[in-house]
Length: 71
Ligand SMILES: [Zn+2]
Image 1 (cartoon, protein in one colour):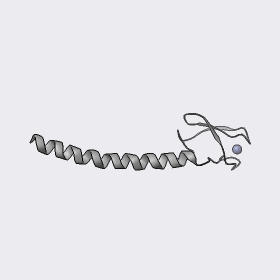
Image 2 (tube, helix red, strand yellow):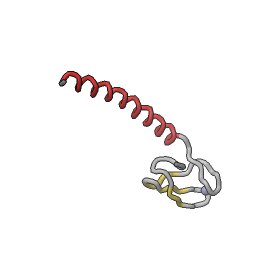
Image 3 (cartoon, protein in one colour):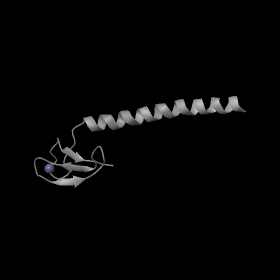
Image 4 (cartoon, helix red, strand yellow):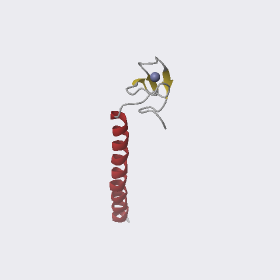
């Protein structure tokens, strides 16, 4: 019983780790990409804080995804 529990937990953990790694990679690649302003379409919008973005061209502040625009 104990052995079975450890074995299944280990398998679950490994699969879970891969999923998290893939998800983090996806988020990181989106963060590295320059963000585009939804108002003037200029790329290079800066993130001021979590979910707050500021466009240096049209000076608009807007809320979006915490780490990247969209979603
Ligand atoms: Zn803009």
